[in-house]
Amino acid sequence: MDAEEVVQVYLSDLEASVPVPVNKLVSFRRTRIKSGQVRKLRFTLPPEAMMFVDENGKPKLEPGQFRLTVGSCSPGERGQALGAPSPRSLILI
Figure 1 (spheres, rainbow, N blue to C red):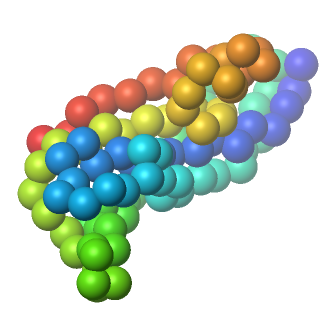
Figure 2: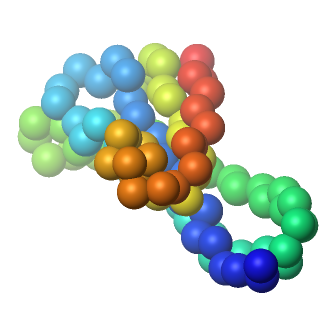
C-alpha cells in the first residue's frame, strides 16, 4: 500500500571524552512511498552534527569513531518489538 515514511538519522559518538547521549537525532526526512517502490534518499551531515557540549558548556568536536544509524524509528529493541523494520548502521572513523 502507498504510505509515508519518516526516515531518521542518528549519530552515536563511540569515543567521547565526556558522557554523551547514546543516540542523537541529527536529521530526518518525510517521504511518500508507493506500493512496491524503493526510494533512495541522500542526507548531508555537517561536522557540527558530530559536536557535543563539554563539561564547561562549550561545543566540542573530537576525533574518533561514530556510529551512524538510519531507520524509521530510534535505534533500540523497543522499535523492533513494536514492528518497525531494523535500522541500518555503519561505523565512521
